View 1 (cartoon, rainbow, N blue to C red):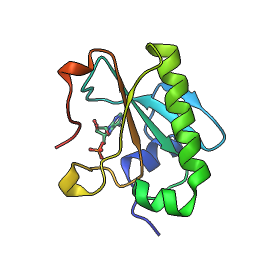
View 2 (cartoon, rainbow, N blue to C red):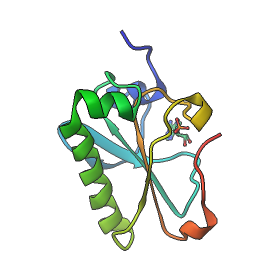
View 3 (cartoon, helix red, strand yellow):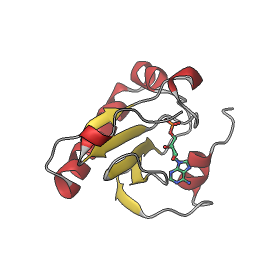
Length: 116
Ligand code: AMP
């Protein structure tokens, strides 16, 4: 079984967040340490996948659903355009091993990288 992460606790409700979007299999909320005017996280409810490579191989439809939620958030909160970042592995800045997409929008010239 995968080790429990902070995002697993968010999915189970143990750690409260303000949900920005929810589908049957995905939730989205604000990153607590924003790197841009808009910085949201989109995560699957399942704890099965630690990173996007595993998710793409195991459940590409779920990955597509996450990206559709990212687009919806960018439409609602920005001009519909956004940067989508998956940190993949500790050397790339991944700190939470429950796959998640960073959705950044607004004044992106001030923001180049996420994490580390
Ligand atoms: P990564 O470095 O790609 O693994 O991204 C993990 C992200 O989760 C970081 O940007 C953190 O700021 C964010 N984060 C960690 N805990 C929480 C939390 N409880 N609520 C919102 N964002 C969080």
